[in-house]
Image (cartoon, rainbow, N blue to C red; front, side, top):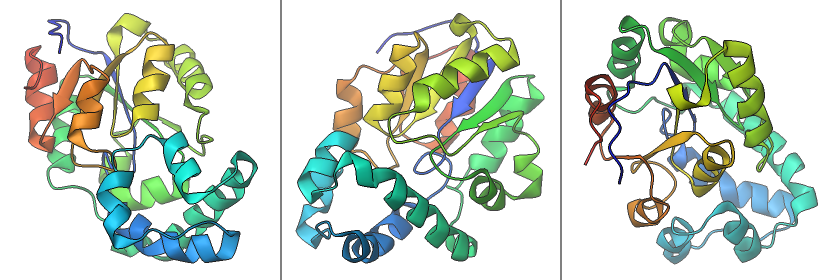
Length: 219
């Protein structure tokens, strides 16, 4: 874990598992998607194992070929849209976003989910704090969206921080030479996230604003 005294000027959040507590919905919908698209359902005893996998390992485990992923992702977004009122934000997300915005930190969301779903879960007040949305990213397509986002917002890489809950979030950030903060309350287990050596390892939502605004790494 590294410590960096510079306050980020731009924080780019993943959405599912980072801001939104959508993992229970993901589990509920997975078997429906498996039946519909012809891959293996999640057995209850597989859950913790799967939380230790990255996206490619999960695909291999359940037998989803890469060519099916866009169709499955689209179906998942549609299912979520129909149950959007049942997807909450994690406790503390609203105050955290407001604290960062009040200190003039620019906020963005980079997600594989749809912008409509993201805005609906955030609600009007919190959605209005987000200056840039880059949604509908393909499973492994976050790097190109990160690049365009930085250019559009006029922020240098050294002043940006990505925050997410999956290994692919870390890989996208590192691929674009950006700092990365991992959250431990989402889709991927804390030990797996720690192994990718994030700049920050956040164990509670309430850790984020003090760590970033105070310039101290969350322990």
